[in-house]
Image (cartoon, rainbow, N blue to C red; front, side):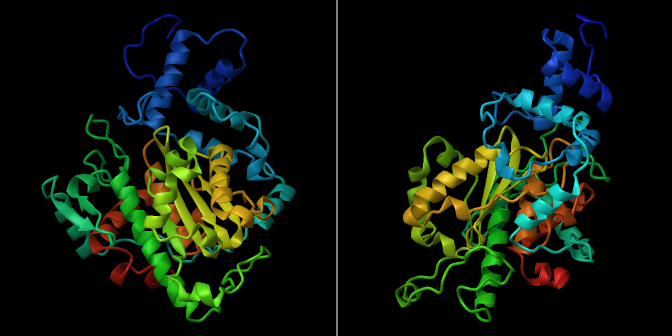
Length: 415
């Protein structure tokens, strides 16, 4: 295609060609040729599912981003996730997307010292089971999922412990008709397979319910104030008799998908009522094991994990995005809640590794699956893109089951 020539349809570039074009758009002193810029913008829209101005626009055909994902894996992280904190929060999303494509051309392999520093900052010891972390469904459950997907779109299929209902239409974002038998997306113009807020929130509730149940069981055998995981970080002292007499603080909690935009745009005080409804005493947050915050920004799902007992803030992104702005917003909220108990020097932002998505539509599945793995004490790198088609069906089955219990109790698989 020559400069100025109109494109008759979708154009496919190799990753090498794409990276060369992206480098030119970022480093060349002259403007990018309109045809190249339009092509790159089109790829951005396909990868992230929408234009920058429309949060819910559906993707056309999606992309196969295996090459881009491989380049993301090769990216060398900074010595600390906080080293990016001076970056400009307002970088244009397209420019940031293009910059990510060029990283593979400029970095070297991780050196041993960097990896050692990253590993030493991890306060939780997460394991990698020898058995598959996402086992196949039984034929009975495969049939139950198929039967559920054949019901009317508005019919309620499942509900959570808090009473949130899941319709067949919601499940359709997990198992849309545009997947072929190999789990690849079919470009037929039907609704896109991005998880909606209802599925994200419902599965996060199931994960938190399981974490809370396990924490309750562990409290029966581990004295209060001691951690079940090795850590050199200060932990909370045993609660006073007055605290023990009060209502027990949840050990696990998730905030729904509207929480992060609230604290980012309206400040920490804007969610005071949320804590009251959840029966979370802000002065006692340091007693909690995990606080999960799913983030939806730029048509992309990511996950913030606050571990108050370990004084860590982690950011998991299946496209290897930068955590700085998200971490800053969370720190402001923690400082507001904890008041005099907030000591920023105690808090670490460990380097985290996330399994990488190889397309433009599985980010939501990665987000909630990573939350599940962390709750189970499993390294999120124990699963990858090849597990996602099966995991979509397992999530549907677990929601229909009413949560992670019975046949879907993770201890049946991982312990």
